[in-house]
Image 1 (spheres, helix red, strand yellow):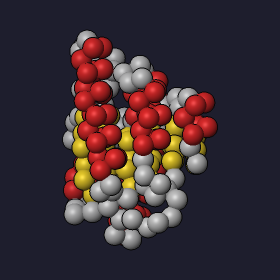
Image 2 (cartoon, helix red, strand yellow; image 1 turned 90 degrees about the horizontal axis):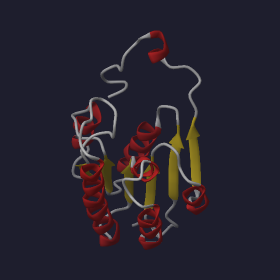
Image 3 (cartoon, rainbow, N blue to C red; image 1 turned 30 degrees about the vertical axis):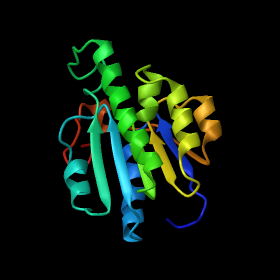
Length: 177
């Protein structure tokens, strides 16, 4: 660990790029041989980021949790299944954060899990308070609450200006997933 104050960083908003920004930070951190953990809430299918992150071993560990996105992309699972998976993923995340093994931890889509009521916000508040002084903790997802924004050191809001989907262009392999 560096001994410098670890930051709480929030990437939020309706625009694309929250996970990409977090992964870019991980890429930079690996360049300095910092140990990084990425825990994804709700994303369970294969994406290029999974394969790419595996190439950063041994500096990066990747954990996918959840049962997919809630109420979109054909989701038919009961909400209680999503809540249970989110809680299990959070428990793994919390254990890793307090372990002292990591320099950087990304909790990808945890803010969305709170906003969609899969996780109580108090758990994320507890996570922030429990992190070591020098751990950089990155939280991503739509609809960050005022409380999480206030607790963060850095907050960036992704705002959509233009998106190819508006012209009927679907998600692109290697760019969007």
